[in-house]
Image 1: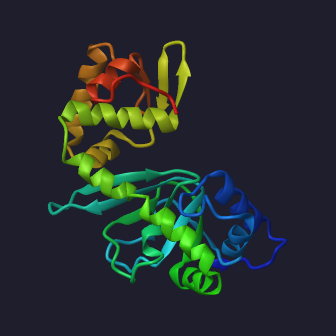
Image 2: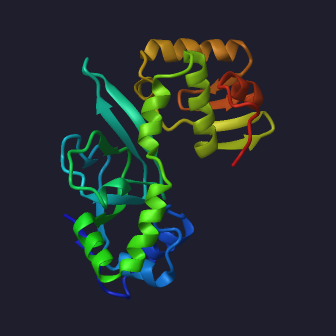
Length: 250
């Protein structure tokens, strides 16, 4: 059950305020401290266990969720019953912000916790009341929303374009950016998904993922360490394969 925290002394509210500022959630990033405090006072906190759904496909999408701890995946079920992973969310990531101003509609995807998740939920009804009370806040938020394209839509488009090698290379670069660290041997990545999960993320068969990763390893691009860790030995070659020029760390 959601746990609204309305007291100024609540440590969880202070954490929310800190993350809204430092994580630069786009729709809130330009708001002054006073507006951020008003938003935090209306946030509901909820914890989700591994495997629990934060949002179900087909259910009304009525909130923006910010992950203050843990990881989750956004996915949808394909026509043949396979799970298509659309996006991976980590601490500080968020989803559902486009629903804050639109009429409630069924979600086109599900979001499930990959481990214990602590989420901060801001419901549409509370947000709209804020905009009625503080119109200037609404103007700033609408400006941010109009400038931002949905990351999930980009993910769907990405899955339908490019060669298979390019898509796998782009996915490894994405994982390297989010979960990797530089070592003398290359970029060491603790993979967030199993081979089966990567297959779902890419929309291909598990056997194809294993075969392609094996080929990349034979070509000297990668080195496997067990089932959950890879070392990208030549990040620039991988970036060229993905059509992104040279590798750069953000």
